[in-house]
Length: 104
Ligand SMILES: [Cu+2]
Image (cartoon, rainbow, N blue to C red; front, top):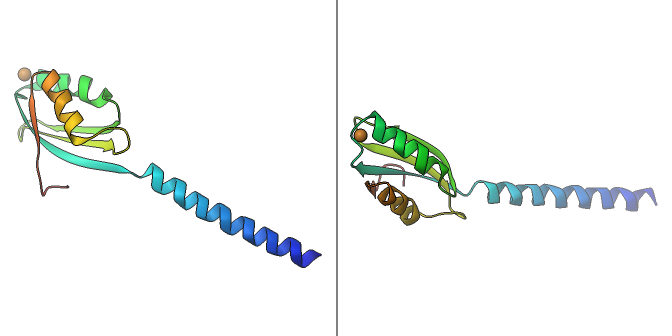
């Protein structure tokens, strides 16, 4: 009887472990894309980007590099896309192009 219980405990443990791994993978579907942002020329522009893009649906992190005119956007791939983020830049009057080969 004790042996059955032990086997069941092991099975349960293995199952929950697999499940936890699965859940972690689902949480980690993040992607960071660097955008070259045309029209971001001063601190105010950076603030505008931070106030708008950072709150776009699916965006989890945002770093602006004013001298390089670049914005590093981290987003959840299940919530948004590169195109949607570029469209959000367009809405605030900036042209964002994903820089290939930097981190994507
Ligand atoms: Cu400006």
